[in-house]
Image 1 (cartoon, rainbow, N blue to C red):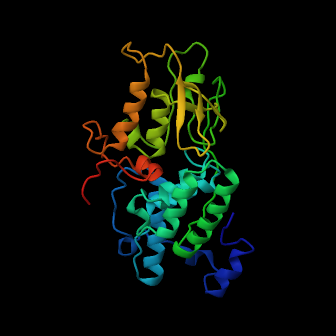
Image 2: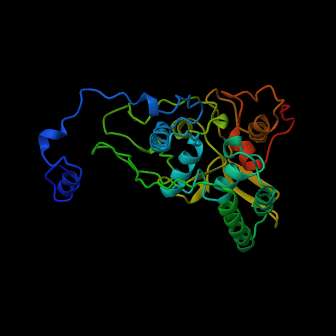
Image 3: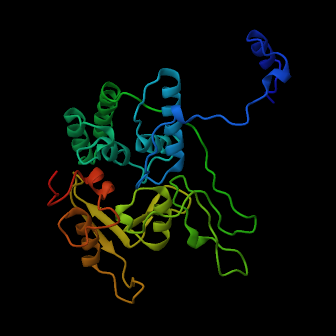
Length: 307
């Protein structure tokens, strides 16, 4: 309770001549537009919280110093996810480093640094965890050298369920599995989140609200255990790789059917990668065609469009 009579508040008010509560009346309205940052379209980011956070930073910068900084919404969004304990969309350094700072990253962070991109490319191709750790330590030092600002935030999971929901859980990766949840006697499960999914061409989305819906309608070769981060088989029953982790062979589960009754085979798996990788493919369209996860994690596209 930080009322005017609070032991810490009252001395401060006395110091500026406002010790009497009747002097603290507020005007009926205040116009703050002069210090508000320009309105921006959040586009594919889909994070109202990041928009609000950056808007506050820009507001105080204009109010205090009369200058405008065009801060990165995506940077605040992804860094906060990391600081929340969400190691990313999958628990490997490439998910954070390569997506934001690798050779195929978007322009959100400005000019790419060759000393960073070359090391990230080297580490991503290694299977030796200790060798990768050494390289990522170098990348950390380079990020301190090149990146001007790291916003710091703290939060906690806001997932909540009715008491009679069976199978309820909160995922550290934000990918709750609704198919394991139910209420006795009901055939409909209602779930509310921050916003509607922006789109459902899932390979071309990057916001959590869309990807949570994508989790419910698609399956991957490998998955995470419900409510955890341990990797488990999904459409693939197992896999092998060569020593330097550059070639991978997956064994597909038999008898998997699409909703139209057709059978899943290796051609479907290959095509799902090709339509993301080949920018000239007729199915490389998505919602806006950025496919930012693929370029960020794999370093770019085949047949990229002209700059």
